[in-house]
Length: 282
Length: 224
Image (tube, rainbow over all chains, first blue to last red):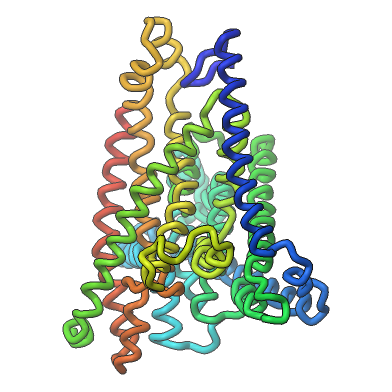
């Protein structure tokens, strides 16, 4: 196998690669070993620091925290998708009076950091419990990014699609809802789901305004002296939860992408616009 | 306007700290991200596996959690003593924020660099090898010039995201743009107006960068 940078290795290169592999393993094993040693030396593996996992009350509050995270994610995702669809349609409108304000709104909310947006709602407007501010912030920011995703999807479709639809006598709205949007959503599905992963990760910002989600749970349990302040064990558990939830979503995206490749209803685009938009998903 | 002018002593240092956080972590994440990208395209499978594992783990962790770990949990491991970071609590939190931002952003930088290298067709490298160019010549005169075109626009998006992400430090005792409003409330100022000024500053900083990024993307995508 020849890659861009390297030719197929010959016998001497293979030997050298084995040497590099051994060196890498030594360095990385050393790093991991050092971290594990620090964990052991500061008593992170002691039973006491993990015993909180055995208490039913704590288990229940962990489930509560997880559900709160998922609640913020679910509400944020639904509202963001609606917001994105509406403003994508607005940006694609033929009327300047709709198009320009929609573009301004989308640019504005993409430029303001999500933390500042959430703070504006929580400390500035204070619409109610922290959940409201978190969901509002997530909706406006991710909805604006999704609007761009939808718009890029519609624009990437071959012009023949809308021309044919107009030729059979469809109206503008029909062309959009019956022809363009369904195809755009299929083409952009990977990008849409990556943005939902970003949204899921951003629910952790609720921690900054004391929304009782997973990180807030971690801080609470981590401060218990009875368990020897198990901040590190709790962080490991919470991180594992976040990573598995995000990976599940990512796998869903890959699965859908594979399935759509078999599906004949999806138009093969020369260059998938999804890649450009996803690059910005940090 | 009054909220801004009366509290310039907060806004000035706040935004200076944001810029400082941004510049240091931008350099750090570009360096670390490039090293990770080298691991991910290396001909040695172990190196690729390590790069992939790092990127997968970090990309699926919320940045807030990384901040949480470095600000609160990391000191418990006693790997470094407090004096290493200048001794004071404020300087420790600043370094913790830097570590979090660098380690997190590096994963995204790595992906941008890697996909940039992958956009160069294999034939380009094969042709240059056939001409007898050395590895360095091939990299310097054939692969990198082409990869740069594909790397710079998405890298700018990543850096814009980094600039916005510095505000998360507000939750972890670092004084910067995101935490201005928290100090304003102590002075009894109107928080909404104070926060809108912060948002306005970010819009002024980010929108020109976004416009530049888009124009680069358009100009360079045609050239290939």
